[in-house]
Length: 427
Image 1 (cartoon, rainbow, N blue to C red):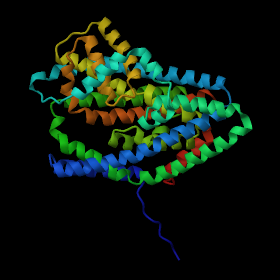
Image 2 (image 1 turned 135 degrees about the vertical axis):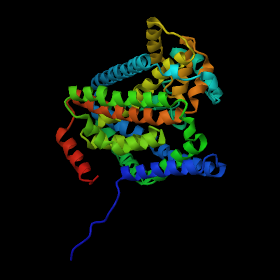
Image 3 (image 1 turned 60 degrees about the horizontal axis):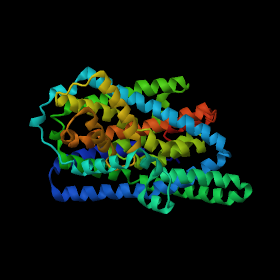
Image 4 (image 1 turned 90 degrees about the vertical axis):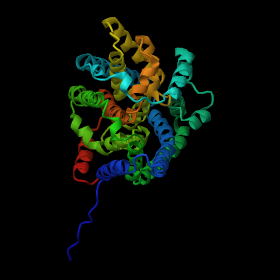
C-alpha cells in the first residue's frame, strides 16, 4: 500500500508567513490600542521564552567548551584571534558607513524642521549615566562580584568571564571535574530540546512583533526618511555579500553555504530585531556545521558584545546623516575622530538597553550635532534595527567558522553532510 508523504513547512517558511501576517495585521490595526496591546504582550512572551533559555545555554556550553580546551594557552590564543577579528570587522563596518555617507549624502534630502520627532529622553539619560562611568568602570564591570546577580540582570560579559574561569578550573582538577562537565553537558542538551519546543512558537511571536511595530508607527513613518533606510540596508547588504564574502573566500569556504545553514535564524533575527532570539539555535547549528563546540561556545556569546557589524554600519552612517541634516561639515580629521570614538563607545555600551541609540548619543557631541537630532530617526529605528540585528547574527556565525578554520578544528565533512541535510529538508 502506497504511503503518502506528510506535507510540512520548514521553520523558515513558517516565520516568513508570520512576517507577512504581521505586516497585514499591522496595517489593519493601525493605532488600534486593543490590538497593539495584545500583539505587544504576545511578542513580549515570545522574547521572554527565549531569554529564559539563553543564559543556561551560554553558561553550560561555555563551561564545557572551555573545559574541553584543556589549557589556558589555547584559550588565550583563541581569545586573542577572536577579539582581533572582531575589532577588524567592526572597524571595516564603521569605515564603510562613513564612505557611503560621504558618497550618497543622505542628510541633504531632508528638512529637519518638517519631520515629526520622537521622545528619546530615556536614551539621553542612559547615555549621560553611562558616559559618567568612564572607560575603567566598563572594564571593571566585566568582573562579577556576584555571579548570581549578573545572571539575574542578564549581564553577558560578567557571565562569560565567570564561565571561562569555571571551565578552566574544571579542566584543572582533571577526572574529578568530569562529573561537572557531564552534568552541564546534559543541561545544555535539555536546553536545546526546550529551544526546539520554543521555536515552534516563533511564527506567532514574529507576527505579533512585526504587527505591533507597524500598528504603532504605520508605513508613513518610513516615507520622509525612506532614502536613509534604503541606504542603510544597501550598505549592510554590501557588507554581508562583499566584505564577508571576501573573508569567507580567504578562509576557503562559501558564504552562501553558511547563509543556507542559518537562513531561518536570519529571518527570525530580522523579524524580532532580537539577537537573543536566535542565539541557542545558532550555537546548535554552527556545531552541527562542523565548528568545534569550544569555539562556538566562546565566539558567539562574546560576539554579542564585541562583534556588532550591523550596528557599527548604522551608527557611523546615522552620525554622518545627522551632521549633513544640520548642515555641519565634517573635516577628514573629524571623521577619523568619529571612527575612533565609535570603535570605543560601541564596545563599552554594547550591553546597555537601546545600545545603538546610546552609542549615537555619546558620539554626536564629538561632531557638534545636537543630541535632539536623534529624535529625527527614532521613529524608524525599529525598521533599521531588524536589518542590523540580522547582520550581527551573520557576522557572529561567520566568525565561528573563521576562528575554527584558523585553529584547524573545522570538520569539513560534517559541515557538508549537515548542509546537504538542510537542502534535502531533513533538518
